[in-house]
Length: 186
Image (cartoon, rainbow, N blue to C red):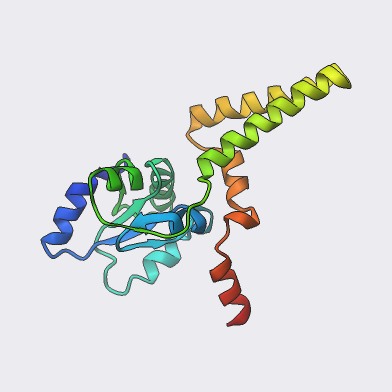
C-alpha cells in the first residue's frame, strides 16, 4: 500500500474548511522547539507508538492523522509504522516543515539549534578525517573507519533511513530538557 501525501497548502485548506486536523511532528524535541508548524504536536519518531496514539484519539480515529518532519523522510517512516500496525488513515505532509515554511504558513520559532541532518554531516566528516589521520599516523587498518562511514552513508541513501541520525537523536543534547525535568519533578 502506498503512503498518501498532502501539500502544506492543501492541508491548510482542509483546516480552513473546518476539518479538525491532527498534525504530528515526528522530529526530535530539540528540532521541534527550533521551528514547527502551528498546531503540530511533537511525538518523536523513535518514541512513536501507533496503537497508543490511535487509542488516545477519543472519537477522532476515523479522521486522517497527518505526519510532518523536516523534509518528508521521517514523516514517511512514521506513516510506514502506522501502516505496519494496521492503521491506514495516515498522510505524510509533502516536503515537511521546510515546505510548510516555504509556503508562507505560520510556524512557531524558539531556540536555534544544530539540525540533526547537520549533526550527521559533522559526525560523518569527523569520523572520516579521524580514520584517514589514524591510518596515516598509526596503522593503515584505521582506514576501515572511513570505509565504514562511507558504507553507512550509501545504505542511508538507498534505504532513506540513517542509523547515525537515529543514534544522534538519542543523545542528551537532542533531548528536550524541559520535558525531561518535568518528568523528574512531576
